[in-house]
Amino acid sequence: MQINHHNPPTLHRNPAFTQVVTVKGPSTLVFVGGQNAVDAMGNIVGDDLSAQTEQALRNVIAALKAINATSDNVVRLAVYVVHGQDIRNAFAAAQRVWGARATAMTVLIVAALANPRFLVEIEATATVEP
Image 1 (tube, rainbow, N blue to C red):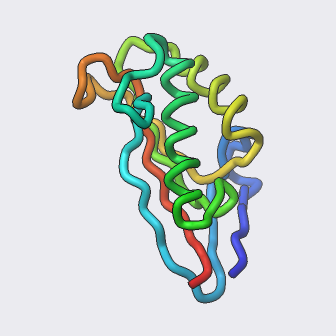
Image 2 (cartoon, rainbow, N blue to C red; image 1 turned 180 degrees about the vertical axis):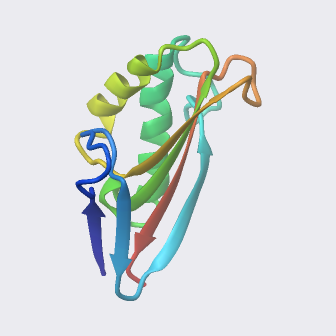
């Protein structure tokens, strides 16, 4: 399986994301449900967007690890941020946990999430070899 990241010269280039991701070869698609800033005991970690983004991404990584995958297998992220938050704090936190692994990404600003204390929720789509 080969995962390729493409940034056409006619589209904006940003180190935080990739415009297009392709997967060649046999693979299994993996969908990681929305992860929030909750630890293994169900406690909310952090009261600010930065801390919550770090925990949500750690949860995505933990979910991937459970199926012997890593963030390198991720082809798309969807990030939901509660209205009124400074998105730059989420990007800075992502760099600390996720690193420089740009992938296709959608960031949505939403009115609220399932728990009023949640500030961010992150979904991932990955591909792994069968």
